[in-house]
Length: 288
Image (tube, rainbow, N blue to C red):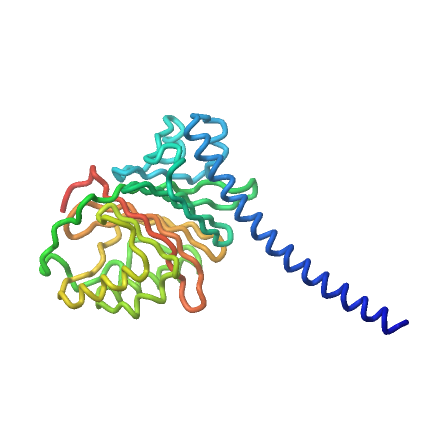
């Protein structure tokens, strides 16, 4: 009899462990759904012009960068809520990723792209960043090799931003190493600093770029002998959320208009890795 009881107990323990595992997955799924539900409510309130609901979904540091590169604060947005470049997004392609306390939602239709970065606060998920990009219809004219530079002081050696935490310092170190790799045309040294799902969307490009595409581009630039030092940073702000950091910045290319950039970094095994980068040329900025 005791043998049968022991057998039953073993079965119950196995079932309990299985249910706990399923429960953990369910909790993770609910966390993702919560971020997505907040995003859907955000879009619905935006389309309906429901300021009351819209306002509740904004983080105190919320900013909106439109397709012209103009950036508005939370207060400015609430004075006159802008129209999204994608409207109600009923026919837009969407993708979602959740990194701990940070949710990344991308929506696209044709050449128009929107990034919304959500952060989990005590009241729930709140929108921290909305960044819009309209990409080019045709590639920009190829720059002459002499137009680029192989010298990278900013950001490779230093930037006009004082880090405030260990996470920010680690992000800066990873960023400087990867930008040095870009300057040296070293795709293999560049790759460890990016997540496999990495996406780059720039108003200077004609389509989104993936990790594989970006590596191929670095190798082609090496063959062509094009100077590829990154545009110097002129301003930055970081928002750490545990193992994820949201980085906002502006850069001044050696030719062309200044760029407003939104990035998300995630702590990896060896390096902090970039998960997404949206870049919009600031149309009101002077052309260099």
